[in-house]
Amino acid sequence: MNVLEYVESSLRRSKKCMKLRDSQLQVLWTARVDYSRNSGIKEHSHDFYQLLHIIDGKGSVSQEGRLYPVLSNHCYLFKKGVSHSFHFTEETITFDIKFSLAEEFAKYIANYDWSGGLAFNNIAQFKELFRLSSINLKETHDLLPFRIDVGYKGVLLEIVQDRNSQNSNPQITTPVTETDEGYPMVQYLKQNLSSKINLEEMAEYFNFNSHYLIELFKKNLGTTPMQYLQALRLEKAKEYLEFTSYSVSEIAELIGLTPQYFSRLCMERLGMSPSKIREQMRTVVGKDIILEEDFSIDEQPTLTNIEGS
Image 1 (tube, helix red, strand yellow):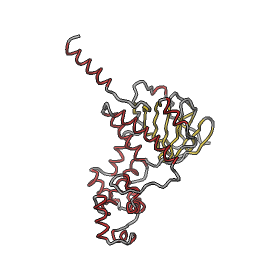
Image 2 (image 1 turned 135 degrees about the vertical axis):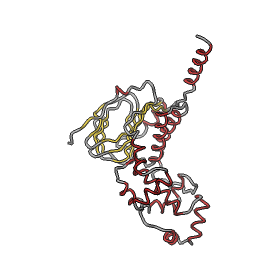
Image 3 (image 1 turned 90 degrees about the vertical axis):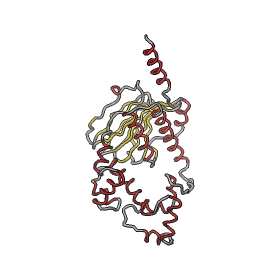
């Protein structure tokens, strides 16, 4: 081995050693899977854990011989060695994650009853983790698998924590990011995405002067109420484009815009048409995104057609 070969070999070994993974949870595989009507996965089990997040759809999930209904915005955890199957009676959109757990963390998660699924409405978190996984598919980076591991560990813990605190009163704050959820005026806008509301109506609802309302938004959110509403509508529209089969016209109506204005807004703010946004997302649907070299696709159950019962 000459000097150059030795250096290159050392760099490869060094890079391999730099690959970081979380010590408690390691994602083995993840995918967004869209199931057609009367399709699913036959009964099976495996030596790792699986989290199935139902975005939208209908059907049933079987765990150890017990049947549970498929519920939108719910997560189903399949523990190591536990037999399970899926049968979807309608078109169903899912995020699917397979992962390993350290013994101590597995015992903690096992303390909770996951049968029948647990509610989880924070689809933005799944979307961000899937985005990172998609980036890793195209251009791997030493830190990406670690970020994905930690992200999904956070999802598991958030699901458990939310279940424990269902009856507690969440703190209402007003920063610019996701914590704007508790902001009364932001909530009002979110509840009226499809309505033809204007600044005067909103000001009247909160018993504020229009100019005061604008200043309040600029001070707390860095924008005006109507600009914020426009951003909320675009974000919701992206979600519809990516995760539903609604037409562009139907989506425009759902967010309170005309189809023409909606298309123009997408071009101006997002740099592409609604159909292009949908096409871009669909290119990764059904693709296997493998984060662990030893994970074998060939050994996994395959999609089958299931006759309606």
